[in-house]
Amino acid sequence: MRSLQTRLVLVFVLLIVSVMVVVGTFMLNQVSVYYFDDFTEQMNSVFNAEVFSMLENEAKAENGAERLNAAVGAYSSALRISSYRNYYILDGETGATLFGSNDEKVERTPAIISALGGKIGQEKRVSSGYMDRANPIVLDDEVKYIVYIKDTKQDQQNLTASMFTIILRTVIFALCIAIILSFLFAKTITKPIGNITKGAKRLSMGELDTTLEVSSKDEIGTLTETFNDMATALKTTLARVEDERNKLDTTFLYMTDGVTAFSGDGTLIHFNPAAVDMLGFNEKKDKTYDAIFKELGIEFSSLLNMENSFEEYDIEHGEKTLKVSFALFGSGAEESGVVAIIHDFTEQQKLENSRREFVANVSHELRTPLTNVKSYTETLAESPDAPEEMKEQFYSVILNETDRMTRIVKDLLTLSRLDSAKMDWKNENFSLKKSVENAYRAMEIEARRHRHKLTMSVDSTLPDFYGDRERIEQVFINLLSNAVKYTPDGGRIDFSAESFTDHIKITVKDNGIGIAEENMPRMFERFYRVDKARSRESGGTGLGLSIAREIIRHYGGDIKLESKYGSGTNVSVILPKEPGDEAV
Ligand code: ADP
Image (cartoon, rainbow, N blue to C red; front, side, top):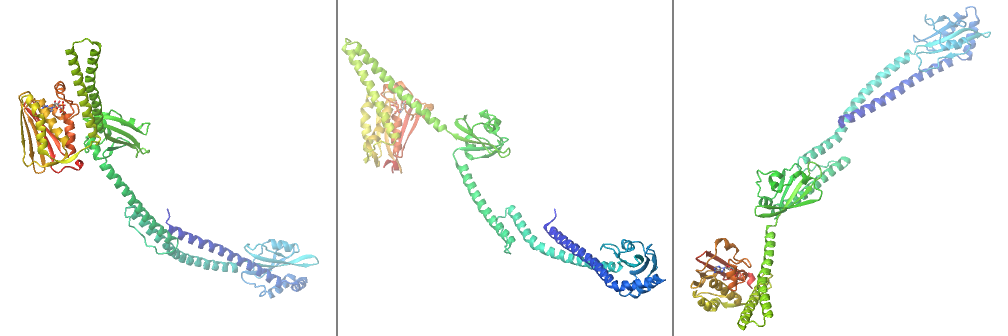
């Protein structure tokens, strides 16, 4: 490809050469025309009627040709006779050369033929190699002689040759100047363009601060200005894109759902920490779809050809339940691939499961007493004559079962209020010491009934507590009642309240049946009881511990269980001295 500079120089050269060719041709042609016109004029001015009649008189003599020769010779200077222009006296009948200013024999030309026919003849073509004039000398209607002038055009050719040399020199000179000028001119265009090209290269290499100096107000200046505007716009756009990318990166990094992306050939191209966490893959080794989602049993190629916009699968991964949504991205072969969003819904699943279990438990707990009430009532209705003693026993069972249902429903209502934070708390400042004593007193008789040794020790520095006195006392009673229930008769129960720097600890310790280690994690679950029959027998609902913990947690505290199967249980209530925000 030719550079702009070369092309400009070539245009200039062609322009000059073609102008000079046209001018030269025109000038050389004009010279020929001038010579031709000059020759014709000279011939016309010499060979006028007077000269013709004089020549005719000379021709009449015996030695007409000789005399004619002499007569024409007398006009040599007017006819400009020279070595390039000669005159000849020709025979009027044969055209043979009789005399002449040189010894040449004249060939027949169209002009001579015309003169032989009695008419003045002259070469008409300007471009012809010679100029001539043939004048017939007519005597008695017969062409006797012909006075013939012939010019070889040598003069003209000499002039043309020197003119040609001049033109050639001029062309060479003009060309030299044109080349220099066009070089300089081309430089004024190519230099700024070169600068812009360099700037564009720098820009493409990432030097976004590139700006060019605007040195003129012409089109090149406008181009440079536009280039600068473009560079600024590019910089702003890139900054905006970078910003967006940062935002996305941050979202990607901190989102709780896992994200992985695979290129068209199944190679892992993106992933976030949540994905590594959920799927537990090795980010250094597992770099393909097959390595990460092998347990799914779905071919990567089938995902690439999915018909819907996305496909969802549930996978059990260890103890986790994950929902994986696959979606396609891109359309070209190279940029396309599959993105997978992984959502961990283990907790939701657990919640859902416990909700179902809870409903099943409630139904089950209520069904047993209801069935009992129904069957005893039916029996009473069907046997009016039954013995009074039996009737009383039946009524007592019905009453017991109804009480049980009432307790369950009451406990459920309490739990529901606690869950929905609609509990009506009657908060006040009260003496914990008194509450502990109240609980002790409430359970004293029951403990004695079972021949338990119930002891109480209360720290004298035990502070007052701000909260719902009745409910907190209820918690203590509940724990004491459990200790009484789950300790074989004649056991030992220690009830104590201690004050620490920032918390109060109320402990109920028994040497009862204890709780097996495998049951410990479920003790606070609603309706969970280690021994259902025993619990039911003693009037338990399986909701006591969970209600107690909800109440204590409401005041920013907690309940801790320690137990050894067969040796006894230690239940501690921890209450903060400064109640939490919720307690207010
Ligand atoms: P319940 O109304 O059945 O007593 P709780 O929620 O109070 O229900 O207690 C749940 C279960 O925890 C009981 O059924 C019992 O199996 C166990 N439990 C509670 N306290 C004790 C204890 N002090 N010793 C042994 N087991 C206990």
